[in-house]
Figure 1 (tube, one colour):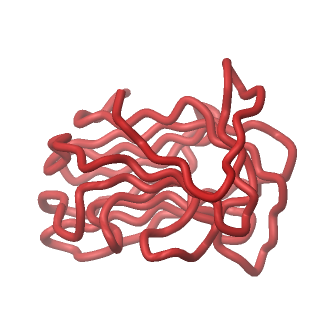
Figure 2 (cartoon, one colour):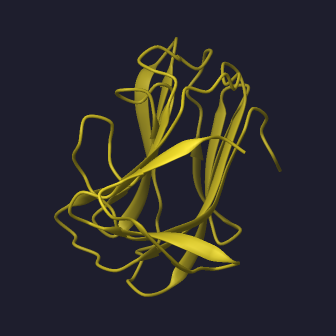
Figure 3 (cartoon, helix red, strand yellow):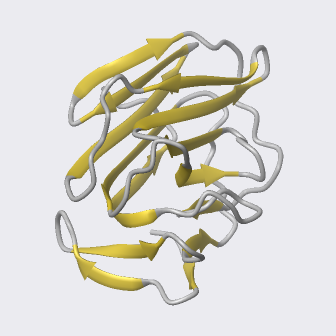
Length: 171
């Protein structure tokens, strides 16, 4: 585990497994201490999310590393999950889910990247894949932020549970 700080009144509530953090969509977020996880070639991000509100005209950040997609961010873009990935060859590229999420339901969201292949899964089903090439770019900070984009926008209104990050691509 990592050390993290909770900001602006986050509460712990029953979650998908044991306990989840509840973020109010106004100013709550979680930020880890600097981490040394090697994410330059392979990556898996796995989390459970339950949204309290879904607004097709807004963004809600689930998790990000670095100040702007260094190397990844997962967020809600309206009713869809959107992954952003920054590689040396392609810069920032995007991949969104096909499925529209609804409020009040738990979803398992997984992003993987290995050898130029990115995949986005929702509840164990492949939502999409594409092929951004090159090493993952890690500039811009070494903290993980949950519930907002680094810099303070796109606040998450909902719950996060069992957030895991691996420096390898799980299948």
